[in-house]
Image (tube, rainbow, N blue to C red; front, top):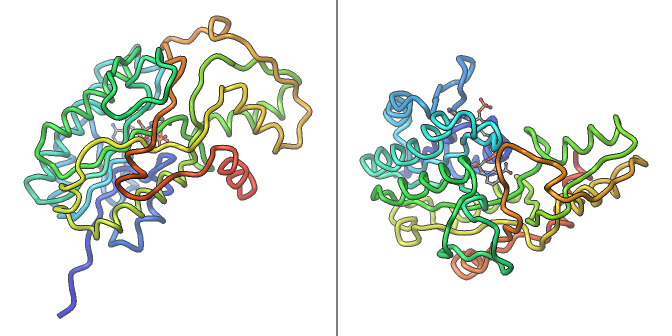
Length: 297
Ligand SMILES: NC(=O)c1ccc[n+]([C@@H]2O[C@H](COP(=O)([O-])OP(=O)(O)OC[C@H]3O[C@@H](n4cnc5c(N)ncnc54)[C@H](OP(=O)(O)O)[C@@H]3O)[C@@H](O)[C@H]2O)c1
């Protein structure tokens, strides 16, 4: 007798990570991806819990991958209620619905749950202290998901870039062709991480766990998932420039010369050891991934 093919509910295939996940998850089951507008096959608005209930009822998933989030870090400061509904409340609802239906959950979170005062890579159980609304609501979402009994894995990632969606790489590429000189913040340190690497690691882990929720349950918890190495936004911009045909001049500046509504952590490098020890996975150095990404785009 043939086994039923797993069904994967991918909440939003429109963002950077979600777009890559459509392809990497496809060999593991039937992927049903959601969007926010009526053109989507299945509409899910995380600020509207009813739409989540309907999606779960329709798909009856084996695995739910939530790639949607309110990611506008600065705008969140003036839209805290919406950021909270999407980032803090919805993950708990996803957890409850998944528990009810016996589905596993994969969810993403952020380095912005930390305040950036450390100078050695953050471990999963280090003290969190988000500086802004985005980080605070993402942290609440982690907690809400873990408080549900769901067989859930949470991957905290950082500084995501890629071919699809809005990100620093694409902004730099545009500005390099428009400007002769750019001033870039040099005192915030993190690990630029290619969306494709996140999606590939996600699929490898789901495959290792044989798409069986109970196996996810054995490994439930938070994992740091970023590229190896670290740099500043200025260093990131320099590396992009090196791989571009532009003679734009880059000037390093302190964050104090580039004020933003939300405060960012000054140093948010994540320690990926737990991911390596648990799943035998390590993402490549950010330089290598960037080169590969830029060669393909
Ligand atoms: N971007 C980063 O640098 C970064 C860093 C650390 C962690 N993360 C985390 O990684 C995950 C993936 O991020 P990403 O960079 O792929 O994000 P992204 O490119 O900004 O995409 C976010 C997605 O969420 C969807 N979305 C927003 N509000 C929604 C709502 N109310 N209902 C349903 N969908 C909604 C968006 O849909 P529309 O396309 O319709 O707007 C979009 O598809 C998120 O959990 C994020 O917090 C990202």
